[in-house]
Length: 226
Image (cartoon, rainbow, N blue to C red; front, side, top):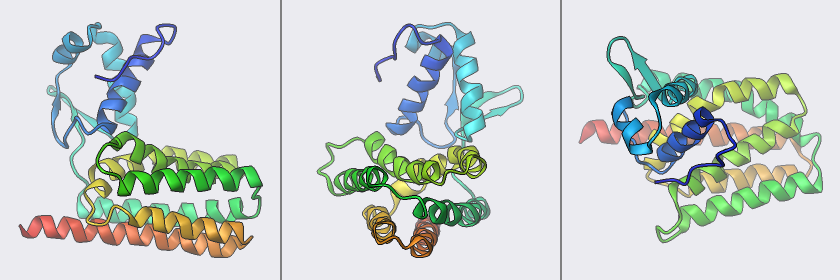
């Protein structure tokens, strides 16, 4: 069970982080019901902060609320949803990367390099590295670039999409047949950023998202064919 945050933090915020941590630790499978009463007993809290936390998770796309049935973990993306999500990323993230590439700093480039190294360690590890660490490293790379774009409107647009991107990572990409590909793709973006090639970095980001899309579709088709 994940350690609770500080008691000075509002209880609903604590429960949100606990539940999100459980998602990132792979404890909740797609489509599984979320019984608020059982969660209340398990976490030793009242149902009110849990309901608030689940409502926040609903906005990320990780859970869904069904009338008269309560909450359940969101199902796997349909093929159509997956394609449309990746198409939305293709509109947004190359532009964020181009803008970030025009404003690189040594500190930013080092932070990006660190996130890539962490992702590489997670992808090639012996299983002792947590799923949460892998997801965090992947997410950090994209958030660093969004922040460095220095465009609050573009960054806000990415953050509004990020819950669905995280759902993609949790329920799609982690089952990929090539877990090391994201690190290689991130490194190609970083190389272009280091070279001061903003357009090249945007192109590498576009290729990265296209690669992720192709892997996800391939893995979905393989599962469907079993």
